[in-house]
Length: 78
Image 1 (tube, rainbow, N blue to C red):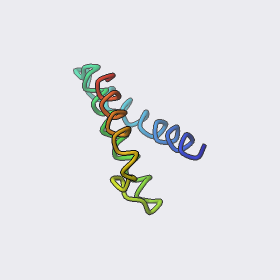
Image 2 (cartoon, rainbow, N blue to C red; image 1 turned 135 degrees about the vertical axis):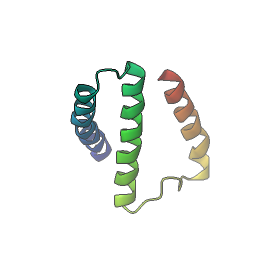
Image 3 (cartoon, rainbow, N blue to C red; image 1 turned 90 degrees about the horizontal axis):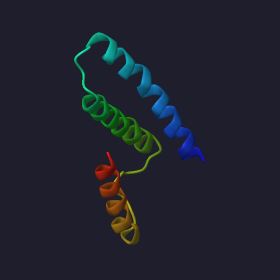
Image 4 (tube, rainbow, N blue to C red; image 1 turned 180 degrees about the vertical axis):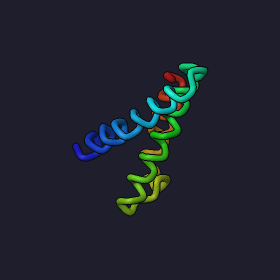
């Protein structure tokens, strides 16, 4: 539950930043907006994990395949 709350907070933090970016530059395409959403989410999520004393790549061996599969599905969905 805490991770879901953290994800919502991260999304809420990135939305105003991107709105400011869109207002200052009218030539931004939807693909660029999506790119910046993803970049900001990576940064915010990485900071959250490191703040809690974990290392992002410290995953048990039995879960690595499913995490890579999930990342590939997420990437192809975007």
